[in-house]
Image (cartoon, rainbow, N blue to C red; front, top):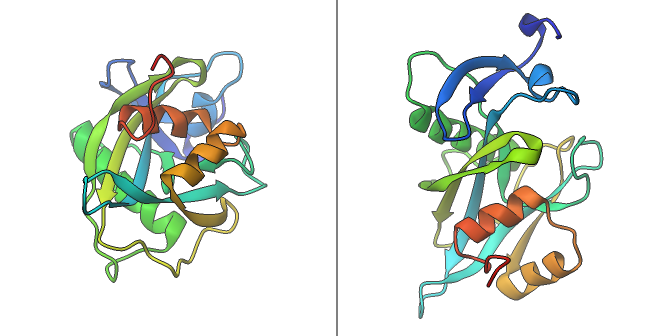
Length: 190
């Protein structure tokens, strides 16, 4: 195991969403013995004013330098949940969802949004347990300052355009599962 002091400290989770304690990020991603850990995924979107369904969403194309799924489409923002002692996991997840969204898109106080928790979902293969958030906004931002190392570009997509990415197999499995959980795309069994 790597020295925890030299690693980003994230949250060790149970598959049922309970916080176990801190774990180093490198240790969590150990190939032989990965440790279950918490991540957040956020989606900023607009609603169709007639039926209230998703009209457009803000998605990112992951940077070519990231380890997992470079060049793939994912939600607006995502990242590991940093460990904080003495707070409930729901509060830590929400705070980290705002932090990741701000870091990866450059959105700050000048673009207010409220995140609503959509659910908790585990991807056992990768030992990542996702807290998923959605924010409906009146208008999606057009000028963003992205984290160049992690984000290749941001795209505003209508549902049909999103489905094209899915059919081409260029969407991360985490984003697919989150979109299914939020009811934006049908489940595989539908």
